[in-house]
Image (cartoon, rainbow over all chains, first blue to last red; front, side):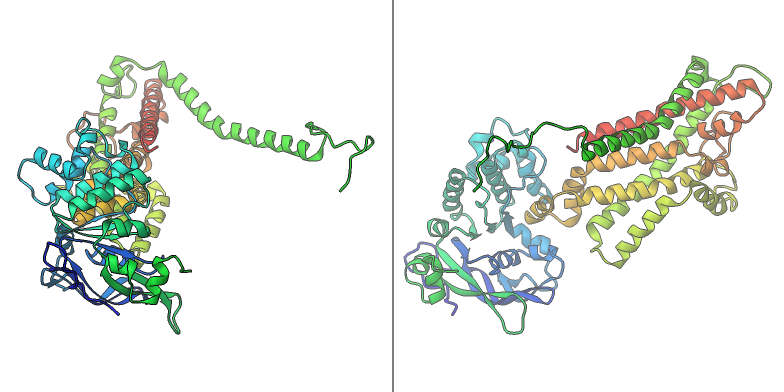
Length: 273
Length: 296
């Protein structure tokens, strides 16, 4: 059912694996949200998670940098291997994991501080000792928002528009120089123009970072991603509610044009309930 | 489908005051207005009475002189004003760190288990404990045992008694203030690799500053006016304060002592002290309201 990520041939970067999920099952209390996910997320690419609501794609995303630790009763079985280490091993510090694997959320959530401080925050707590002005400028430039903010760095991050706030949040994630950036439906609260800007931004960012994005917008997955994972949910016998699982994971082009699974075909063509 | 004829006029839309429901409406409006007047009446009467009785006695000497010996004229309440500030300061220095710390634990660290609920319930009960009980407790624990360098009645003991009174307010407002901060903010900080401690200190706590500061100011205003816990902890002193490990005069105890004395000069000082105390507490409440405006 799960297809290995090592199939792409026509891309420049090597098919190194960035994050490997091995039989990952995530539960809330006794309820299993998503079951038995195997997946090799490639380095230096954009990987999209698509699927209907409740299929566990956001849950899996949050499992990739241990954000699920903050949700009470949430537990993960299996292994998530990053740089040869299982990030769920007992000796691993989740704070260290999140410094290497940053996150951008669905709702833009700038800190109620100045634009400058929003960027400097992550760097400071990571013990950054270099030129802070330079770091702030570089991060804002990389997030395509420098021109709009360079004259008002001292203003509150909340004074920006929604789309600008989201790019500020991306700049904030870039500033800690992670290896991976996770994006949980980063455009669902934005207008089409802001969405377009963030999509362009992602093409730029994948030169430096590996990106994993959850999206409800299939066109967006086609536009931005190299690899796509389709999740679905199915009712289980004797259980209450549906359990999510990974249906198919392959090159985005294959998922949308020649999926191997009927469920994927139905979903990407819109014939899905 | 019916068609209106000339005889079937539609009902008028005009307001009809003779209708039963409109009469009742008017009656209940009047009744509730009457009760709300009764509610504010005591406040207004107390304020006006204290302002008239005490306000005319305000002079420069009132703030700079000691109370006169019984039978003598003039004098002031300078020592009691300083004493109220000292005792309240001691109380705030204890109650703010402990209360804010406890609130942070409840809102951020406790995972809503039985222990946190026990503390929340206990805190609500503590808020309802009569202030004189707090005084008796501190008397038994600190004054009678002479733990402070063999001293019995001390300003420090008074401050501790007031701190016990302030704690529930500070804990509750901190707890509730922190829980009102959107989860997305702390998620954002944790998502860029901030530890829990850094997230709370740098993001969550500053965001909840307004409600916490408001709660602290209200707690201080309440403590500053308390008398019962001070009578047998800080006691009283006719002299200038001699540090926190000696008995100290406070305005509220001065009012209690002087108002019932058979001397005109002392009675007048009690009124003057009432005036100063009321103005201070009013100012603190206005400050709290002003702080609250920032929340919106």
